[in-house]
Length: 179
Image 1 (spheres, rainbow, N blue to C red):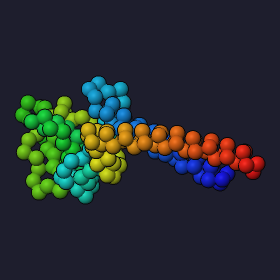
Image 2 (image 1 turned 120 degrees about the horizontal axis):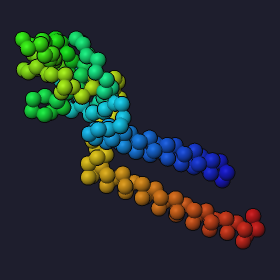
Image 3 (image 1 turned 135 degrees about the vertical axis):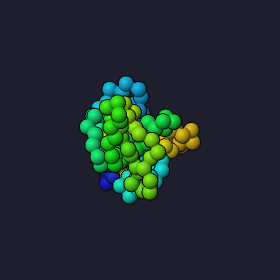
Image 4 (image 1 turned 180 degrees about the horizontal axis):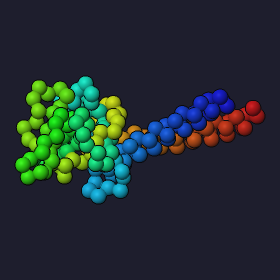
């Protein structure tokens, strides 16, 4: 019975670590996307294949909020319609008035984007990718995902209480029978 107790303790520890890491990732993702976030990075879930194979649909990307841009830099920016896009700078455009802008293009797109992105619209530069984590984050933020997560957590707590009650009864039976 002692071996089973050790295995259960290890399982509980791993489960709690997974829960804390998952909650931490969801919280960091949420906080990083708030206006005036105190974090030095932003995170986004990639929802299209325009940057494949460099960045795949469903990946979570993390962008630095520094302002170092150049040709071949992958940036996340707001397009003229206000959508958040992650594409590569393929050319730096200088207008007649002297203002700079970026011509961008998705790695998987044939043509460049049909607009020039001013530096003020750039939100960050690509830092790294966590493959497929975006699918989990999107699911976790949905009503159904929250319901499933809360239900699993509640079920686990209830099962812990049932386990403790059964162990107490087993111990009482063993003591009563003189084992």
